[in-house]
Structure formats: C-alpha cells, structure tokens
Length: 307
Ligand SMILES: NC(=O)c1ccc[n+]([C@@H]2O[C@H](COP(=O)([O-])OP(=O)(O)OC[C@H]3O[C@@H](n4cnc5c(N)ncnc54)[C@H](OP(=O)(O)O)[C@@H]3O)[C@@H](O)[C@H]2O)c1
Image (cartoon, rainbow, N blue to C red; front, top):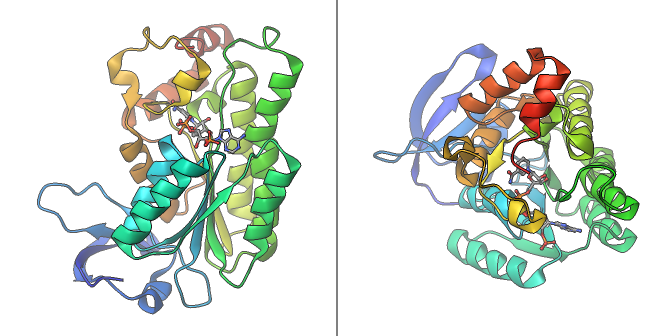
C-alpha cells in the first residue's frame, strides 16, 4: 500500500467528518472497516469514493467480481484495484480478464486472480463457489454483476433463453451469495447489481432484478453486521449491455445515460454507508420515486422505452 494522502470521511453515528491522513496500511484500515470511506485528495476531482473492505484477518480481503471483463464489472475492478484491493475477476472472456488483471496488478501492486467461468454452466458456478469457500485468501467483498437481457419481450423469446436470463440474473447471484455467506468474515460485503427496472413493471428482466433488490434489502438487515448487502440499481449506463442485446437505444435521450465510472463510485459510496439499495444519480432516484406512484399502465409504458 502506498502512503499517499487521503481525506478520511467518517459516517459513524450519522455524523460526517472530513480530514486528511496518510493512507493507512491494511492493519490500520481494518480498524476503520464499516465506518470509513477513503477519498483521494485531488485538486478538482472529489468523486472517487470507495469503501475499505477487509476481513477480520487483519489484511485486505479479496473482492470477487462476476462479469469483470467489461462494463460495470471492469469499472468496479479498476476503482477497487486503485485502492489496493486484491481482486478475483470472473467472466467467460479469459483474454480480456487477463489483460485487465495484468494492467491492474502492475499498476497497483495487487494480487489479481482470473477465474474463467461460464456462469450458465454447473462447472462455471462451482469454480466460483470453490474460490469463495477458499478461506486461506478470503473473499470479503462479493460483487454479483454478470448479466444480460433479452432482445424481445416475454413470449417472443424462446423458453431456453428466458431460463438462461433467469439463471444469470437470479440463480447465480443467489448461489454465490449462499456460498459466500457460509464463510465470509465479520465486516464483509455483498453488492448485487440490479437495475431501476426492478422497481417497474418491465417483463422478466425487471422481475428478475426485483428479486435481487428484495433479497438484498432483506439480507442487509438479516446478516448485518457480519455481512452488509447492497442492491445497486443503475438506470441506463454506457456499457456493452445494449449492444449485446441488439437493442435500439436511439430513442433514449442523452440525459438519461450515465457513465459506468459514476455509477460505480456512487454504488461504493452507498455500500460504505451500509445502504440496502443504491440508485446512482438524482435523476434516476426521482424517476424511480415517480414510477412507484404511477398507475401500472403508465409505469409500464414509461418502462417499456429504450429496448
Ligand atoms: N448497462 C445498463 O444500462 C445496465 C442498467 C442496469 C443494470 N445493468 C446490469 O449491470 C450488470 C453488468 O452489465 P453491463 O452493463 O456492465 O454489461 P456488459 O458490458 O455487457 O457486461 C456484462 C458482463 O457479464 C459477463 N457475462 C455475461 N454472460 C456471462 C456468463 N454466461 N458467464 C459469465 N459472465 C457472463 C460478461 O462477460 P463475458 O462475455 O466475458 O462472459 C460481461 O463481463 C448486469 O447485471 C446488467 O443487468 C446494466
């Protein structure tokens, strides 16, 4: 760990305090767990905020991220790697994972493991659960992020495609959370990437994300303070998601798009405050609040835009 200056921001007991101190070593960080966020000191950019995730072994824990080869998963890896977290990167594209791992390990002097796994296969899920259960280098933060949507509405897709979507969005995070919760040390975290679609009537994708939000809110109460769980609920984010989906996004106004760096910063900041739900950006907080009070017909019409 380097000893560059940082602001320390305490959210302990509801009070926010700011200060500057040396970037602490992992043992010092351990004492701050759950109460402190580190904010790098920069002239103009006060955006980078990250929770410090360590287990009770006194060292920096590993952060395991599914879907780390692109989009939000790769951004989680970049931001957490920059703070000295050791990483376990999971996805199918081993070349992209290895290239990201090489870049981050040499830039930040961290351990970065690569687990090539297709999470739609039993073998792929088992490979990841085995790594979660390896307590010799404990995973203290699990980020369930891998996911995709389907191009058509329910009834237009094949039933096999629907089963795959349900598996990647619900069954996989459920199984990985189950495995992690068996072994995670005190002060660990789970972040489940859901979507604002989980708050609105939006086909099977929205229904799957609603499961993730509901489960995370419950787990954040039930397993606290040993493990805190946060559902991360972005709106439209510029990643490969829509391209892979083959969706026409030309109708989505530019103000509705968020960039992945901002989404991840806000998600980590909310997780550091032990929040059960994170909705990055004021505009999507407002839209989500609106969709909750609209009648189903209007909410469904609104949520149907942008496929
Ligand atoms: N972008 C948005 O507008 C948006 C909005 C709300 C929520 N989300 C959610 O954000 C999460 C991340 O998506 P993204 O936007 O970052 O999209 P993305 O750029 O397409 O990334 C998706 C990631 O999931 C991985 N993945 C897909 N299928 C997989 C499989 N079978 N096994 C293992 N990994 C698999 C992909 O890696 P490989 O192809 O290498 O396997 C990739 O790393 C998803 O859960 C998505 O539902 C996205």
